[in-house]
Length: 350
Ligand code: SF4
Image 1: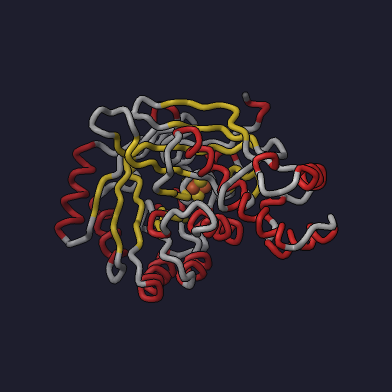
Image 2 (image 1 turned 60 degrees about the vertical axis):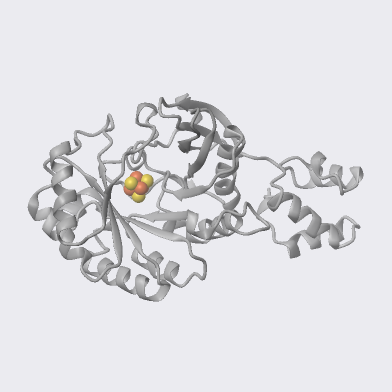
């Protein structure tokens, strides 16, 4: 069945015509759906009762349903959302700062999924171990932000497309969702507050560099030596590091924007001095910021995080060669809501 939230104003106008309604009703309906994010026809008060009923019969409206919620000690909440076809995805809400009394959230980030599962099979990632389900629609991506917003009763300030899935393998739907999240007729979250994270799909980076909005780009690099990257991110073996470096330099030039390189530090795998030198060489010519992330362990892998001493040595080493670097401490580790810990879950697993 067609999803009314995926329809353009023109498509809605055609439906209104079929229902014997004036065309301007299409714009009103579009505004309810995308400006006010209403998921119940009965709340669309400038449409007649009769029209609301006709729409409910013809185009049933369903949002994502949160079937479980887990809360971390650090305030992070992880949701398991059930979509219309019973596909499930995970979404994470992260309160980044609280007021002085630690009662109210000052800044809220939503980490949303772009696919149910993921075909990329990264060796350190729970989602990658579970396989691929399907691409999410733009509405299903936007719904995740709304779920976080409504549950915290707080406006989402930042959106990161870093949940399940490789967003550039679902490019059109992800971009359509980002535009709805960004525009005034949607959620009105500034483009610079929206980050898309790819494991390095070069064609996607090239397309993204041509987008007019100031959306941010992060690349999950995790190794700057080809052999090691091929082990960690096996499905990117056909996207060589030299080509990735070149694509990021052109991204900087074309978009005028800096890129964030995510590097998960894994004990004895990608954290030697030679690995650090390779990363420094990779960064040459790229306007970038490096985020070091101590690995979040998952049950289905033997990989372990690097020690604090190694992390500190990397910060010092990269800073010494003038590469901007920070350490990102993941949120929601105790509820398996941190980077690399999200899983594809089907309802039968509950
Ligand atoms: S790290 Fe990202 S791209 Fe890799 S398997 Fe996990 S979800 Fe997919």
